[in-house]
Amino acid sequence: MTRFPVGVSFQADCAVSDQARAGEIYHVVENMAGGATLTPIARYFAWRPQFVEGFHDHWRVDCFLRTHQSTSSTSSETVTRMHPLAPKTQAEALKLGTDLVGALSAQRLCNEPIWLSVHRSQELQGQAFGEVFDYD
Image (tube, rainbow, N blue to C red; front, side, top):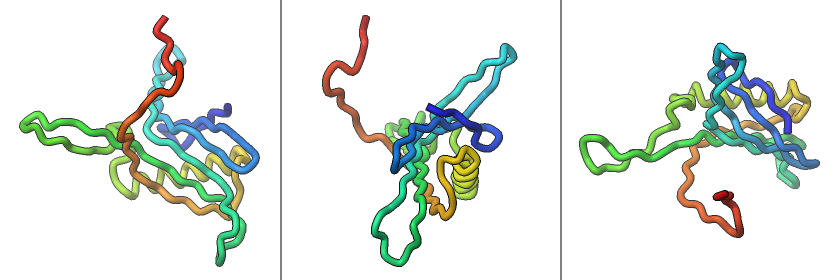
């Protein structure tokens, strides 16, 4: 798996197959010892749509920024918010997506033409199938 910078404060990893790319985007805080804390704030998927009328062959990059739910401290109301380390505004989210496209191109993982789409994403539920967790 490849890891590369995305803009100034983020890094991404990338799993590569013949027709697709997928990975996680992390907010990075470096420490004085030379290491870093990487917090996942988004996932992305890139692929080449097939048989799309009215379009040239192109890559499509979908970037899904994480949201999370929390309960208000003043009421029992559940509030959905962007991940605290993720871009807050639509302009910042588009900038992260644009930086991702630039990084994917620089790594030669995708090439123009590219369509970018940025989304908000919230995990609703999860379930393990088989022995997912190692409790030993």
